[in-house]
Length: 135
Image 1 (tube, rainbow, N blue to C red):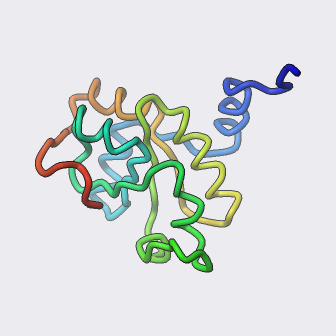
Image 2: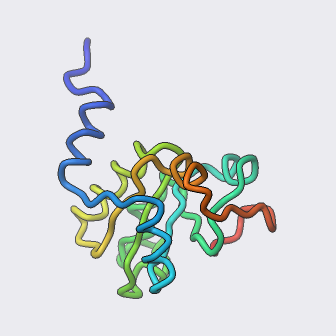
């Protein structure tokens, strides 16, 4: 059985419904108190580094961590702060941003081009620590 909508279509639909910011915009917003949420796998964070002061929330858990009625809820998502999601290239973060936006989390956006765009913009990256601890 063939699928009826591929990942590219799902990402395009998500992108049409969410706010996308540049790495420079994300840096400015982070300086004003926004939380950058890293959705990448822990192995990606360890291998490639991560955005200083980012909060690690694995993509597979984000809906559970955002929902205050979930046993996995993380208090940071109830803080009322702005959230900016990212992954490696912007696909996972587009889908996750759309999902949590549909759940009612706001304000939320994602970094277009993800961590790759962040590094291309010469924005800061750290390898301090093992990448496991939420920042």
